[in-house]
Image 1: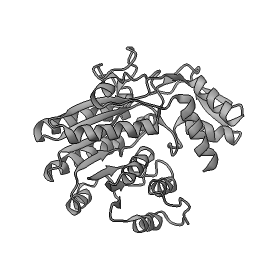
Image 2: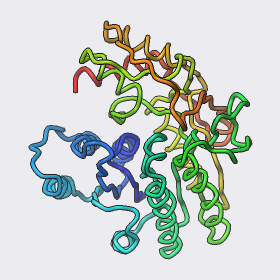
Image 3: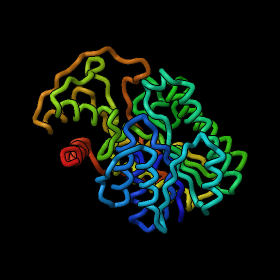
Image 4: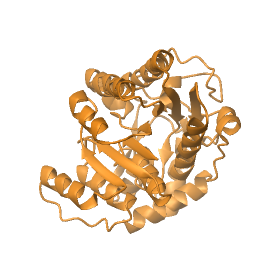
Length: 340
């Protein structure tokens, strides 16, 4: 099987590619190495996903990425430095390969930045995703997995969050773009018969986690004896989901799509274990043997108060069964952080 994966040099994408390649599959990685965070991190992610030495002689971004493309090309792996907003460039990729399934993980991420740059988020997360569906229709690709987000639930008062809950009241542009993706995805499924699973990820963490996300950010700042930004009173809570469980959920979704037709499903992928901010911070402090210096700040616009996944559908439909509790997940993350 040949899988086209967008955002394959990011956190989740690089882990998924690593798994697929180790299991004998072929991968086309499309990533634009966006400056949302340092492109050098994505280069290291890419090398790690290919089981290559992640040391790299960095110089100029364009030269570095072109060298990476050349050095990593193989019979079953090709990297394209491309933006999903550029439909004509994407079309050349679709023409050059026989693609069995698209796994769309690329997006402009982050709730707070989306409030500052809403039009750019719409351009990437909505129009960019539609470009992929248009090309799937044009090239008769009928299997598609799309990354949605727990943020679509907003400040849902029903706990835990189930796929049947109303998600008509997002509280950030990022969440709204993910909701749009779910709605438009159904249109392409209905009109063109594209079998599709939309996966609502719940706060993914683990090795290679983006440096802007709380666990990674707090760990780095505490280890450097710097203040951490601490929003609210510590009672906000998240359903933290370890990266291996997310990859397992994606793989089980792939199997389900390959074995079924006339599919359009929205599925939560979470741990179904809720950890409040204060407890998350305590776990990091214990692991590092250091006490955080907190800079107390008010809750930020667009931040939800709590996330909690009902994973009944995931268990029943695809056999999803998360295996890493938060304490073990933090331990694994720390082992990676301290040796990187």
